[in-house]
Length: 200
Ligand SMILES: C[S@@+](CC[C@H](N)C(=O)[O-])C[C@H]1O[C@@H](n2cnc3c(N)ncnc32)[C@H](O)[C@@H]1O
Image (cartoon, rainbow, N blue to C red; front, side):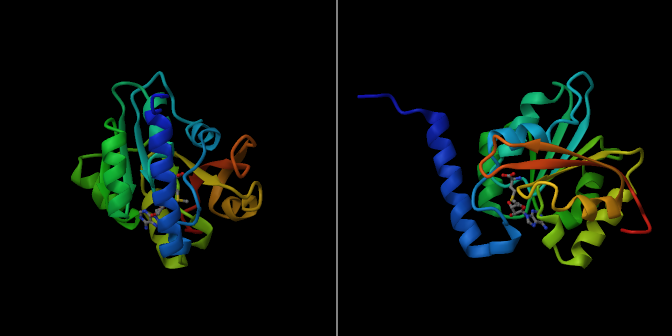
């Protein structure tokens, strides 16, 4: 008998849970399945392996991007993964021990960082379905992001390549799109910087 592949078994378990959550919650989960590896890796393109950084992930789901970030980040970096669904957060905590998993809303991320003594962030990995968030929720998240010091990268995944380029250009001074064609479905990442406070 063939030995079971634990990675494939985990991926199946995560995929099934994601699909059930999508059926139940629709727009807030937004995708039928977790991001594929190509998209997860592209998401982490602005993480600097050579420097200990603070990385914050919003809407971490079952951890596809979290795992890629943990593999890429400097050993002394910090990775805070925020996810509102308790089942996803539990799964995430078990499968990515390097991440500090917080079960809570991205709307509270400023308080979540405050509670951990974090005053600066280098990269925000944004897995939230930003264009379909209620405007008040998105504005609150962007307002808090804009109050972070420096110019942190905000890397936003999408499975609709280029469709939202204009949308993000309205909020950020700098936007570049990195395609992830190998993802199923094909997608990509908007790497954004310089939130315009007035627009947020
Ligand atoms: C499109 S899925 C992305 C999941 C994961 N990042 C990935 O790429 O596979 C969106 C995730 O955002 C989470 N989410 C939606 N609104 C949220 C909020 N306000 N705070 C935290 N998580 C949220 C959903 O529960 C879901 O896990």
